[in-house]
Length: 287
Image 1 (cartoon, rainbow, N blue to C red):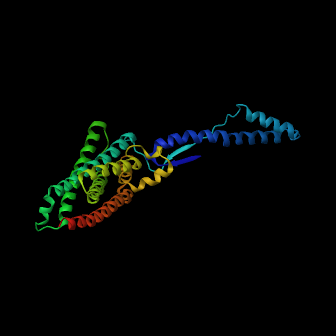
Image 2 (cartoon, one colour):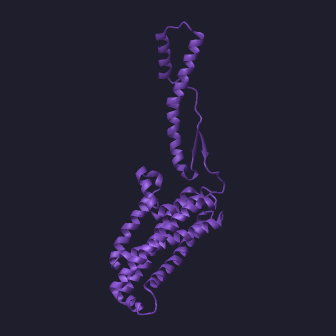
Image 3 (cartoon, rainbow, N blue to C red):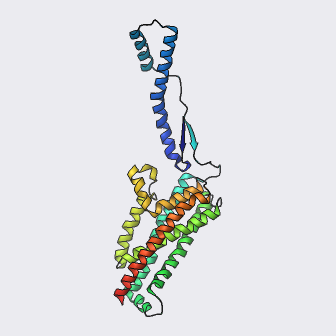
């Protein structure tokens, strides 16, 4: 028998393999032994009494007489390379980087609320700029810092732990940009819905911790219940981590990673549109 699996979920497959082998040995293996003995008795002892035949079969199954073994072939869906990254390292780097990035961007966006409370934001409205220009400027700063923080994390993982960051540079660059855009837009969204700095701190902590928990930043998804694995798709963390898995572990080409990148860009776009609407509403109150 052959089990085809996702190479990025090798730990799960290792656990599943032992369970499957036990089931195969206890069910298929015993059935095979029973059929072999039954055929042997029918061929060589055709006149054997049915009660005696059943007793022999039961004794054979109850004893430890099963010598046949079942083979379970494990085949990865994607061709594996010898220079792929360490699975635990990828999980740690991707999960931690995205979670810390969310906290950093929320703190950067909080500066906008500080300007609002200090009256600086109201003065900026008298300048010949639109309210959305102020929002985009803050978002641009967050985007640049997000990219720098992700790059520094990846370079450190390469220098300290040997993460193969140069195996697919174009895919990695595009993924980093997509993750940075999604995270920075999410940070601006938090700023747009918060009224004060204190409210932002409490709100961002709850939301980011929740997203990181269900998205796989804190705990690998394979140890979570099935329902939590389905809910995880609503978080930025999930798509970012899966994108890093595609590059460093699954060794997928860019065309296969584009759907996850597209989802990250879609999340960023939706968050940006919502933030613009809420930010304009708040600006009218200042005026």
